[in-house]
Amino acid sequence: MASRHRVIPIFIPQRACPYRCTYCNQFAIAGQTHVPTPSEADETIRQHLQTIPDDCDIRIAFFGGSFTGMSISEQNAYLDVAAPYLERGTASGIQLSTRPDYITPEILENLHQHGVTLIELGAQSLDDEVLRRANRGHTAAQVEEAARRIREYGFKLGLQMMIGLPGDTREKSMRTAEHIADLGASCTRIYPTLIIANTPLAEDYRQGQYHPLTLEEAVDWCKELYGIFERRNVTILRMGLHPSEGLLSGSDYLAGPFHVSFKELVLSAIWHDTIQNTVAEKGDVATILVPASEINYAIGYGGANRRAFPKVRFVQI
Image 1: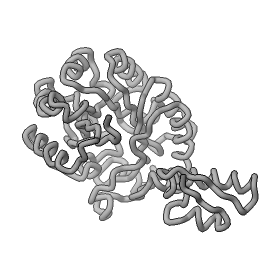
Image 2: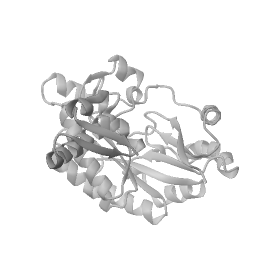
Image 3: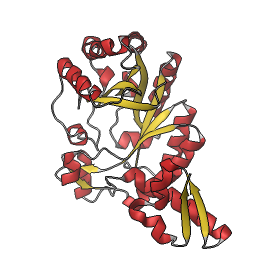
Image 4: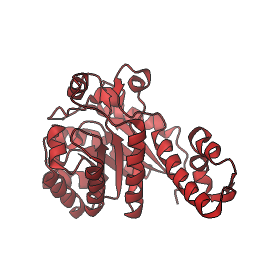
């Protein structure tokens, strides 16, 4: 049995997106402008397979843009690339991301026939006012309907969300998280809103009409979101944007809660609270038993928790 999971990502940036969301510059976010051909996608799969251990469960993923917004023939050109890997058992399934208003019975039937196992919808919010101000071009009701159809066809459902969009509040984001779980999502991704160059939101920021969350606020919101999703058995696949070259160099990033180790900041903050509660109960001198997979988070990003609680001993189990 495979002990680890690996995803081979194929980015198809800005493909078939009918709307210009206020925050979006997909080329900057994905770190690439080139749209790969199916043959190039096949080469990407081959290259990744050379570096993945044999005991891994492998899925092929199509990210970026709105995959099901392409014509059926275009979708199949990419899906057919993955077919031989599924047939040989090299990969166990295909996952993709798309928009909730690009889900129809015809599309779902085609995806089912081509071995797709997980469909992630870019919901971003389940508050209609937030969706309107973000220029998403769909409503919360459309997300609900698409989610229902996806689950009826037997796919696993992912619902991605953003925090700090125009009109968003902490309470709205928490309600979105609970709603994501209510809709039967097995996984989610949480993206703090960043101000990316050459976007409508960047202009609003320059004019003082939009103020992003601070890094501290984003971490604090995500601590609560993490608790909601953990309690509701929804796996968080990612917190924070992938650090593309443009974000790291600052050429694309203007402002907002970006950090190369955003997830680690959140998990370190959660452990800080756990340690604080332990110290409050047992005194400054305490021993904390920590699973091996969590030891770095318990110690804290950059050793922050170890410095904050110098008398606490961390024991890896």
